[in-house]
Image (cartoon, rainbow, N blue to C red):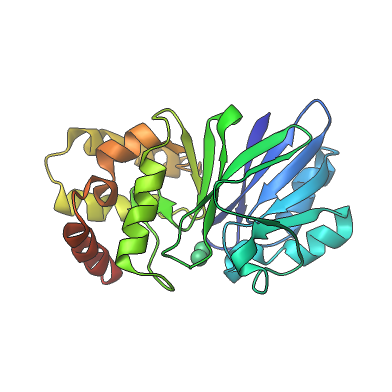
Length: 239
Ligand code: ZN
Ligand code: FE
C-alpha cells in the first residue's frame, strides 16, 4: 500500500491510498478533480472510493467529477449526509470501514466542523486528519466549541506514536513560527523547523508528520488544559 500526496488548489493536499497489487485507490479530500485524475491516469490506477473528512469546499470540490469518471463511491460522516456532495456510504464514529484491501477506523473529531471525522488506517499506521490536526497546528473552530476541539485532539493524541499524520493543508511553516513564539526553548521544535525549511526549499511537502513529533512540538497538543488551549487558539486566529 502506497500513499501519494497530491497538491491541490493553493495549499491543500489530497491523498491517494493505492493498492499497488490491484492498481486501485481511494482518494482522501479531493479539493479538485484534475490533479487526481492526472496521477491516476498516468499510472493506470482505478479509483474506487472518495473519502471526505468534512464538508468544506476545499475538501469535497472534486467529488462529483471523480465519481462520474470512475464510478467511485463517496464515503462521509452520516451526520453530514446533506452537506457532502454525492455521498453514498455513511459512516459513524468508531466504525471500521473496510473494502477490498482498504481498512480504516472512523473517529468523530468535531470542532472545525460538527461532522468532522478522521480516517485511521491502522494497518498502514496512518491517519488522515483533514482540518482538525495540522502539523504544528490545529484547525480553526468554525462550527464546534473549544471544548469539542480540545477533546477531538485528545482522541488523536492517543493513537500510537509512530502513526503518520496526513493533514489537509500545507500550513506547517507558519504554524511553526507560532509554536516557537510560545515555546522558545523547545529543541525538538527548532530541529523540526530546520527540516521543514529544507523540505519547502526543495519544493517538497512537510507532510507526513507523526504523532510522536507533534506531541513534542505542537503547542496545541502540548496544552495541558482547555483554558491554555483556548487562549492559544484565539491568539492564533490573529497571528
Ligand atoms: Zn475545512
Ligand atoms: Fe480546508
